[in-house]
Amino acid sequence: MKRLVGLDWGTSSLRAALFDGQGQVVQERELPRGILTVATGEFPVVFHEACGDWLRPDTMALLGGMVGSRQGWLEAPYCPCPAGFADIAARLQWLEPGRIAIVPGLNCETQGVPDVMRGEETQVFGALQLLGLEHGLFVLPGTHSKWVRVAAGRIESFRTFMTGEFYALLRWHSILARTLPAADGELDATAFLRGVEHALATGNLLHSAFSARTLSLLDRLAADAMPSYLSGLVIGEELRLQQLAALREPLVVIGSPGLAQRYELALRALDVPVRSAGSQATWRGLWAIAQTLGDIA
Image 1 (tube, rainbow, N blue to C red):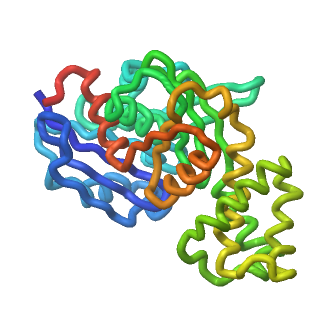
Image 2 (image 1 turned 180 degrees about the horizontal axis):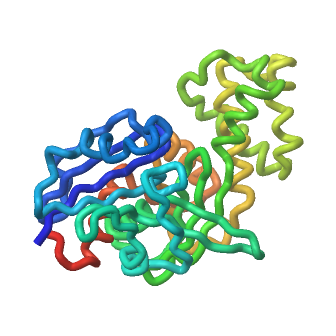
């Protein structure tokens, strides 16, 4: 029986975890060595820097996230939807057979147009285990937010929204930047919800975004509240495009505490029931995928 080491290797950071025989994390580390900081050929070196002292002959390591992209250690071809634990496990990209593998991302198509994810699928699988679910709608906020539909324990489909990236573009690279403060500051819940409400009422981000300038120019909203208001506009636009009125079960939010707080605040204001899964979702997902291989202790 093998013990497990899991890595969540993203664009800007690397997290590593050592599991005990019951799937609990007994040690965890984080390094500022995302894939964009790693030169070609240096991935094995960084891998051993992160967890080399945990590796023994009876250790298996699963690597999730952008490490399997074209800019990563080795490209892991996408697994098509629908996909469950066994489908992912069958498509692991082995760096060392039976010992070190990269978890593939997923792809699906909507109206003939492909969509992809890497890393979020592991978080969803982990949330299923943590919350005891077999179906539901999951949202993973971020630079590129994912809305994931799960049925019978399998990811059926998903859609990507460039919400975080649009916020950054408007915040720092548009005319709005001239009237916004130098730092985002703490969340102003009132301003944030005002932005959400305006986005839902106007139904057009190209129109509603300009209000972040006019409210400032005419002194209708304090400057330090404007980043929260703009965040509400882009998140409100994302929520506007979902069929939330037809939702029959709690929506599951998976993400960092700061972003998850914003989505939960907006969703509750819309009377949408919400559940959340924290940072342990990734580790639980890697453990669940490893369990399908049958020799993890």
